[in-house]
Length: 197
Image (cartoon, rainbow, N blue to C red; front, side, top):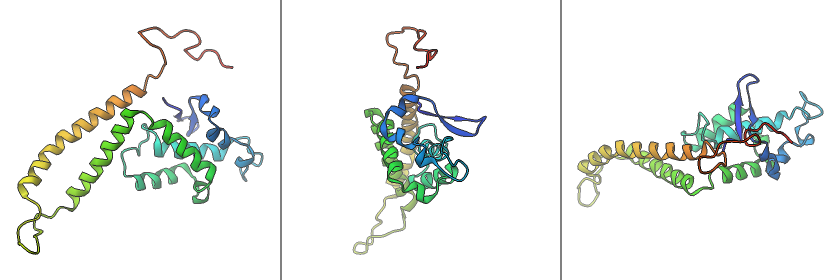
């Protein structure tokens, strides 16, 4: 379910599913009082809220160009590209909205499985980056890491990456349509977003 999309005409993240504003954590971000700034003294343009939405999209969303980066790098890039200051990032209302979006985005069992697999792969990457086949046991003098095991692990890495990509594609495919229609029925007038209340 895509709550945010990038509007390349206005070069900002916009709300795709207005229903997200029914969630109090997101509705609070749109409050005019907290959006007042020098560029928008009345807070009507919601400049701060859209910077916050940009961070949320860039850090948490599957469609983010930074999604596959390590968490610390993803945070730094999301902060820089959204234009949020460190002070704005530390705002409790914003943090609450982040936790809620993460909960919404990652609540399903398939998504949790994908996240767990990605976390395990990060640990394997660390293993490959730090393994030293020349390292020896101080007592026995035998190698700590077997080159045979390392070669086997490297060969299996290709299969692991392919499986992870397949799982990620499957999860994204399940999230994409999210039309709520079942059994091959076609979208009606209300389903197509023709009516706005």
